[in-house]
Amino acid sequence: MKLASILLSLSALVFASAAAQDSDVVTQATTSATAWLALVDAGKYPASWDQAAGLFKAAVSRPSWATAAQAARAPFGAFQSREIKSATFTRTLPGAPDGEYVVIMYASHFQNKANAIEIVAPMREKDGAWRVSGYSVK
Image (cartoon, rainbow, N blue to C red):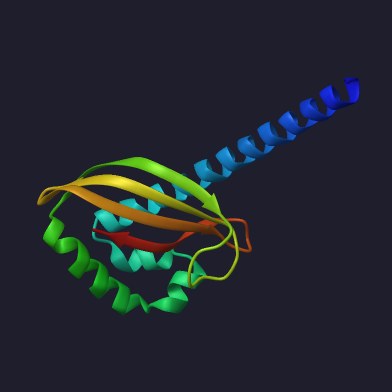
């Protein structure tokens, strides 16, 4: 009985530690996403490309990103606010290599679109930094 109690206590500690680590990871990733989104909100699309993950840069050239981002964001009008609705750590994403990702979903408000959804996917790169590897807005 004592052994079972000890094992349960140890598993609870491991779970709590893993949850705390996931929380730290999510915090780091959302901090990175917030800084990156500030560039996008300001229309600094080339600078946002410069700050993106290597995976992002390999998928789209700097000029193509600037053109596509401007075209995607222009109809929404000026950024007003956003709130994180969910942030989930994962090691796999469709069409991406295995790694460490946090998929963040925002409820966002723009001048011409009061109820937009933005999805940002920062990834941890080899240098340990979190950088955005994907973005969409609807």
